[in-house]
Length: 107
Image (cartoon, rainbow, N blue to C red):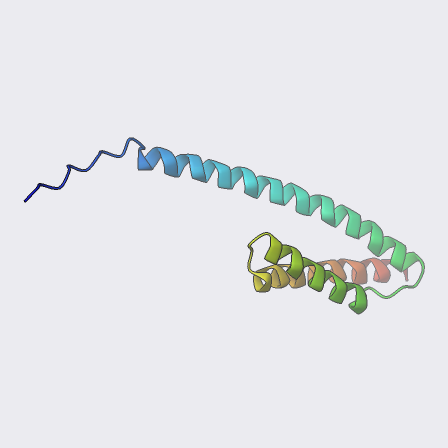
């Protein structure tokens, strides 16, 4: 009967690894916030354009195309497409609210 080899100590400090991973998450979160801010700057311009020309705040056909596109991208990126759709629906609701406010300001 042979004795099992002694476990090799893990040279990686879990607290250090956790700190490193959280730092990466914090950087990604900051990037997402800045990207969302850029996205909303663009959608604000869209809302102003729509308001100035009497166009509806919502474009269901465009939204449907975007949902299909984002679900496909999510699948390719190994992200849950349901989550991607929920995120997009949340963002679009906010965009439509801004567009509706922009249209009210023009009146």
